[in-house]
Length: 301
Image 1 (cartoon, helix red, strand yellow):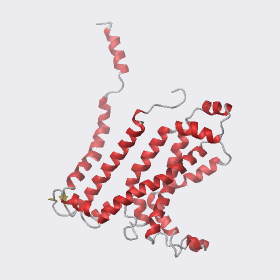
Image 2: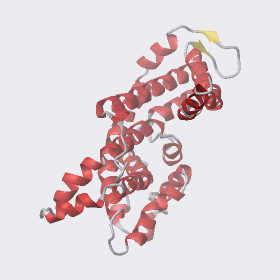
Image 3: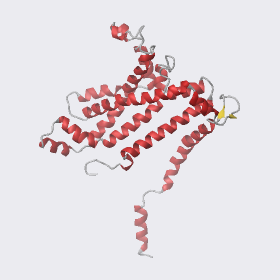
Image 4: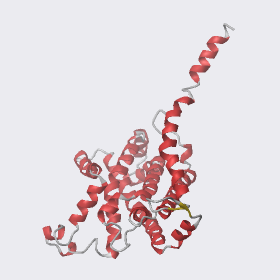
């Protein structure tokens, strides 16, 4: 028995922290995430105006939402916004991140300028761009330029693309920061070996930097794509969903349905759809890219 006691202590020391330490986090997650989500799921089968007693409606709310042309257009706009904003954000974030991880002249000063959008709230950015793009007293009046005298937020064919540009301007700095950190984790010995082999800057980028940033690209892409499903405050403060329904994306449609039309059941259906799409997208990306088997790529790890 005396010989077994040290072995038991070593086994206990190597077993790691107790699973009971997870209990506070799991309790917090269950109360503030799983509980409300289950409540929204139940509410999606109820007819409720937010004040009276909820009445059972079965699948009526789901049929109503799926047959509603405004909600169907909101779903299409959300898909379009997700793809377009990713197509703009990904290459620009990657190139800026690689640039900021280098040793170029004035790099620190330019990096500060790139990160400025991260200091402002989404609502403040929406209000600021709304004022700047106003054809009556915005940039067009300040610079007296003909190209700026457009009703950027009043024309349905322009407003949606303005939203894509403003969203990209807001979130590119954050993703550039991820890529900057990723590039700095790449061992310098790889670049030195490539230089000895005569590889140029472009060859190093495609043969070393991009492959080594695989997991950073997966993480950033997941945040971009899933995050696109949560754009609300910026779009609401910038366009309010207009003109007409030109920028009424799904999160905004959910808010307007629930708190303007007082149809909490149908708004809950839209919320459940958003959660389901977000989870499916995140899990699909993890499986397709093999990111669930990530290993450290740091030198010496």
